[in-house]
Length: 348
Image 1 (tube, rainbow, N blue to C red):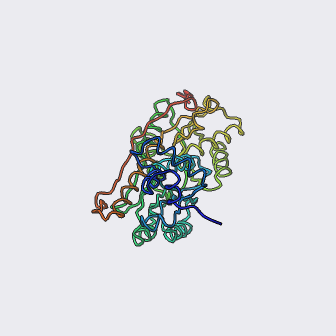
Image 2: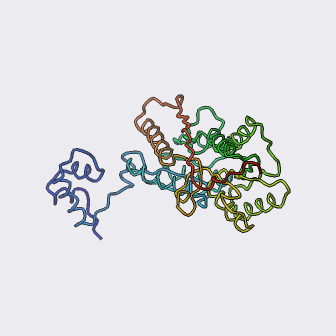
Image 3: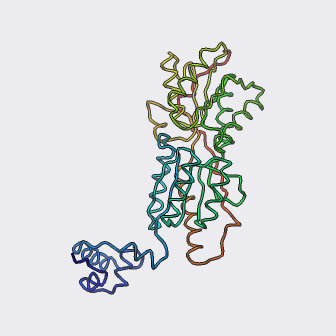
């Protein structure tokens, strides 16, 4: 079966092969009339560019890897969507892998992406002490950026929320509403993100002279959290000292907590206030109205792609590396106040 070439397209359209290449690669400064003519011929010939040949010429695959935590956490689904859209602006495709916070799987996915010769990797799922994974990436010489995660290595690029400050402001808000017994239900403390939110929670209690009750602290991890959250709610509300408010390290945990409270006959916010973290789309639904800390998902995702593309460009064009000036960005949090924190429990 005959496969049309770029020369065939150029001849039929009456333009040069260079012009066809510019149209295919969406270069600027091509006249709209010329672009339309070339695109019509491409459709007529059912032509698809030879991506392998293109990769050999450019020494790039125009593909980046993206490794995220479990997609049962809507934050990762929403951020992955943003990263895919942003990468397309750089003419790059995204290979997505869901890690669920397992170091062994991370090493496997990174090795696979290296073998696939991706141009770079964005990682949203990594424990704070995963030094072996960082060494694996450094040894591969593939550019990489972390988002929503940090690692203790000084020269690692990352884009994160100021998780400590966000948690501190959320818990302080509950205290100002009159709450004195505030629970925290959170994912794995092996994650630097969760660890920082825990620190913010404890600091807010401490500066306001409030006690952190051990039985009000519940770690539910990142996987199969629904039964764990409901069990945490059952344990807390079977004790004599019950919380009047719950702060969670993620919105999807907050929503499971709300369901668990409902099953026990507690009303939100009349009897128990709830605050989450992430501001996923569902949080703003009128039937939920979850008070939460905004994660700035779009900004975080755009910055991660922008930095990765900068590093890829440096490598491709043998430019001086900016590795010593790593992007280590903390985005400022914003507390979004909605109806789930509305209970006034002063005197309880």
